[in-house]
Image 1 (tube, rainbow, N blue to C red):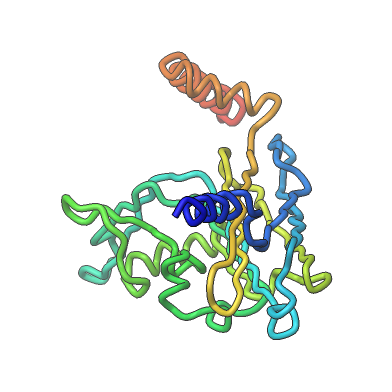
Image 2 (image 1 turned 180 degrees about the vertical axis):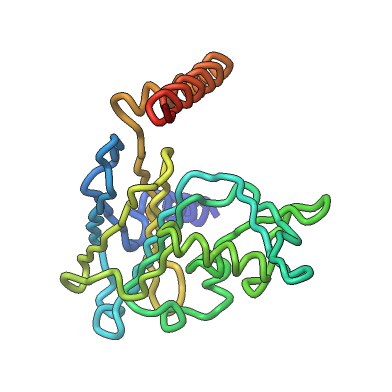
Length: 259
């Protein structure tokens, strides 16, 4: 009886000290983690490199891995309006407020999303613009809606046109079976703040692992001073802006007045 108890203790200790089973790891690196905006900024492009460590040989021999990179910008509130024709005149008939949604959203992958996984997985993992959460204020409730909602469709269309939302189903390139790269465009009108960069490693339609990093977009120089003044000294900034507008109007009237 004592020997059995001792044997049990030895087995438990061996299992506790045994190294964990190997699993894939994702290593991600960005060309920069800080984007500086000045008066001459017209946009830039970040480069993301990634490597899969301890890759499963069976997966590599079959279809291989899939990678999805999603960049979400700082959260903002937006108002979307729908026009209607009344007595031959187009007016804003209805509006909807989007609450705390990404001001920038870019999704890229090595192949089309529908070929990577089933719809339920794409929705649960927020892969693609249609499956990212864009909450709206509907009456007293705040909730996401179906991708076909007309206000959501209109909001996404406007953000795409402004270069703030984008999808690139073939934007991730595998340099080898375990190394990949992609680019992240930052437009000239990109809002300042912290951008989350999420990289998902997927195999056989299931999530293997994920890695998250961030990029900070900040203003520098005179633009940074103006932005800080507008934020910290709101009253003085407002009065100064009104005074400058008044002086500009007076100067223009003096220059262009007729004799």
